[in-house]
Image (cartoon, rainbow, N blue to C red; front, top):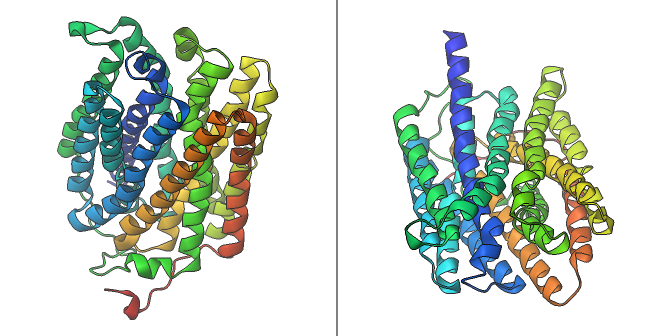
Length: 416
């Protein structure tokens, strides 16, 4: 019976990982198809930054709103509504006739995808004990890599062979990827059931609100750390294809054959970060030590990316970004696990939403700065140098502001 329950939990984690894979496939459609879209809709660097910011603005706000929704209607219904919305939003890109329509689709896509990680965090907390959550979240976070790995060859294939019904191939990129989420929605509705609360983690009718959560220094530190580190991550995620196309003259064949490698490394990082932290816990380390050791090692992978502009070899550039993507997603797995270490289950949606909001707005700030700097002629070197240092600053912040990672104490006056 226990073995069946364990296998059921990991099947749930795998299903959530598929959803996260679809979300990263959907958000990668614009970066990888951008050169073909530009044949119909001209897009400069600052316009590119604007489109990315449109996605991230609603993504961040609905990260918080999605957390609120999940706390109200539960994981099963909430995740279904979130997936249906973003899948239709993804498909709507294929109908765009100009920048305004593309921006609207990006706003809608961000609005839907904003609930994905709060839903994933809540589902993992419902099904897994604290000692297993980092490993489970590592599996879920590996879905980001699966989606991003599939994006270059899949999109290249659609662009090369699309054009059905007289529509440009880039439009079919969005129609096809949007359909994947609709299929997943049916699977989720048929397969997912809410588990009963365990004696160790009883359900709570009341939970601390956003103001009460932000009153704690630890919460503010995680939100700011996510702001910094996701600023770097979203720059890599949204600008790496453009960097490779412009600085190293990538074509569709190269995008399909080697463009996926850094994203594959990010998947390995997701699994390694969660596994290492869970292994340290099983070996007798405290939650505080297990999380911070793994976070520190992850952050140490990031500064090397500042060397990329000096590399003449495409292979060396791919290797450096692969190390950075590995470290980033190892880091991300652990930062997404921290809310489960700090807050009761009833507040996880709110806390995960706050953390995601911080990350999304970090991406907006970094993306806008990058677009301005590139149009001003600075090149990618200074931008990559800044991005390379953000994880180290974020790690120092976590260590200083959270001397000990443990459940926060909320008094009765903190509850609504």
